[in-house]
Amino acid sequence: MSGLDQACARICAEIDGLAGIAGRVAPALLCARIDGIRRTARDYGLHPVADLAHALESAMAAGGARGLVGSYLDLMREAARCGRTDREASQIYLAAAQVRLN
Image 1: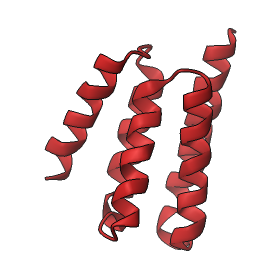
Image 2 (image 1 turned 90 degrees about the horizontal axis):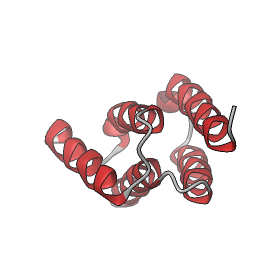
Image 3 (image 1 turned 60 degrees about the vertical axis):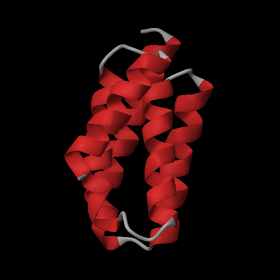
């Protein structure tokens, strides 16, 4: 298994764990865990995941995303598994987030 595959598996495991507790933890802890996912994704060049995590962090900072966390996590998991790391894929996933969340 390549380093990128291992990173994707680790990110998916973190997303799954976070999805299980997202509604029961303090927003600060939730944001810290999302930031960890974003940093790992960025370090491995997984732009779609990193950009979605950043969008979720921004939405949470604005105070309106608590109910959207599950949808963002689903998209982040999908992005981690899709095999694409390019900026075009990031734009596609960010657009999908806008469609799903509006």
